[in-house]
Amino acid sequence: MIILGLETSCDETSAAVLVDGKVRSNAISSQLCHRGFGGVVPELASREHERLIVPITEAALFEANIAKKDIDVIAATAGPGLIGAVMVGLAFAQSMAWALGVPFVPINHVEAHMFSPFIDEETAGRGPEGPFISLTVSGGHTLLAIIGEDLSYRIIGRTLDDAAGEAFDKTGKMLGLPYPAGPAIDRLAKEGDPLFHRFPRALTSQSQTSKSYRDNFDFSFSGLKTSVLTWLRSQEESFIGLHRADIAASIQDAIVGVLVEKAVGAARSNNIGTIAVAGGVSANSALRQAMEEACRKHGLALFIPSATYSTDNAAMIATLAGLKLSRGHQPMRRYDTAPFASFSAAGN
Ligand code: KG4
Ligand code: ZN
Image (cartoon, rainbow, N blue to C red):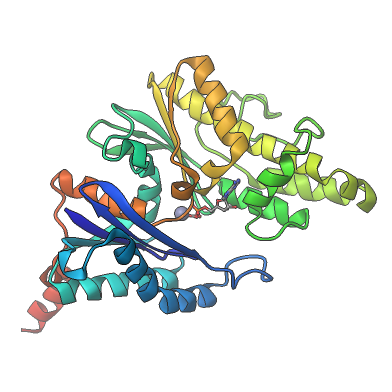
C-alpha cells in the first residue's frame, strides 16, 4: 500500500511516501522566515506552507520514485496546530485525494508523535511490542500515556501549564538564544556544568513541597521559567556572559530530570517494561543519554526515534495512517463529509 502523508501544523512543510509500512521518502522544509521574530508568526507560516506544499509533495514523490496515479491513500495532519497552517495541508491533501479518487485519512498531530517510534527505518512496521509508556514532548505538548498492545492508549499525565519544548524555548530566549532555543541549549549545554545552579523540578520527589508526587504523572514548567527569569535578573551581566553554558546545562538538567523521573516512575508503577520517547524534545542529547542510563538501571527497554523523526515530519503522519488502516480504521471518502451530507438532507 502506498500512502502519501502531509504535515503542515506549525513551521515545517513536510511530505512523505510510505510503501508497505516503510518510509520511502520524507521531504521536510523548515521555515526560516520566523527568525528575528522570536517565535512562529502564524500568518507567515500559512503563506510559507502555501508556497511550498506543491514542491515538497513533488520532491517526496520524486525521491520515492512514485507517480501520483500509484498513490492508494492520502493522510494529513488535521490538528492540533496553527489553524491557518493546518488548513493549507488539509485542504491540499483533501483536494488531491478527491482529484485522484483515493481515500483520505485525517491524523491527529500529537498521536502521530506518540506513534513515531514505529517509523524508525530499522524497525519499520514493528516498533515497541506489548504495552509501553509513551513520553511525548514537543513545543506544544507534554504527556505521558500507556499504549496498549492494540495501540489504544490512556493518557496518565500531562503538563498543567507550559510544554517541555516551550520551557526550553522561553528560558533559552532569556539567555539570548535564537528561536527555537531547544537545539541551541542542547549545543551550548555540552560545554557547561549541569550542577552549576539548581533550578526547581516541580511535582517531583525533588520539589520543595512536602506532598508525595510518586504517582503523580503531571508536569509543570511555568515555575522553572519564572525561577530562571528571577535568577538571571539577580545576576550581573558579566557573570551571566561568563557562565552561559553552565546556565544552559543547569536549565536542561532541570527539564530532563523531571522528564526522566516521571517516565521511569510511570513504567515502574504500572509494571510496564518499555518506554518510548517522542516529539521534538526527544532530539535532546542529554534527555537521550539520561533516558538510556535510567532505563538500563531499571531494566527497561527504550525506543527513541532518530532525530529526523523526533521533530515535525510527514513520515509519522503516513505511518500512523498505515497503522490505523491495518487495524480496520475506515478512511474518509469524498462522499463521507458528514456535516455537508446532513446539511443537504435537512435542506431537502
Ligand atoms: O515536535 P516539534 O517539532 O513541534 C511541535 O509539535 O511542537 O517540537 C518542537 C520543539 C521546540 O520547542 C524545540 O525547541 C524542541 O522541540 N527541540 C528541542 C531539541 N530539538 C527540538 N529541545 C531540546 N533539545 C533539542 N535538541
Ligand atoms: Zn510536533
